[in-house]
Length: 187
Image (cartoon, rainbow, N blue to C red; front, side):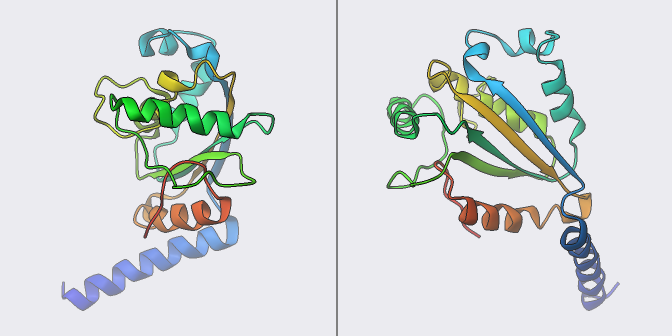
């Protein structure tokens, strides 16, 4: 196949995928609420073997296509306290964490927004703090936020597999509009 034919076919596939998103949005939208203090001291093995968290694990496991997700903290949370706790933990240098903006964003309760092309469960383990490798970038919430009394709602939008190369653009646009507290986003 000629290079221009390859690009035409690829562009058609991307165009079709974008048309579906523009007309219907995501193929699936899930929200899950977690009280972070309930995870304190638990291992990942305890969580996956618990009936309490089976819905959470099953939902993450079932979302296999490209996703954009975000962590929303409850409106009653002290955002400045969350911001300071994150920075205190980040200074320890024990885990690779998302970059933080220079100044605390105002009027937002969106803690972080990210994307994944596949394997949402692996990514959520990293963000919640249940990975064995401390060099993997993620929020690591159980390591610095489990004693803050935070209730976090995780929102997940799943898209068709054909959008895997577009979720970065979706992430960028949503992050700019939603004004995340943590994480910097570029194209």
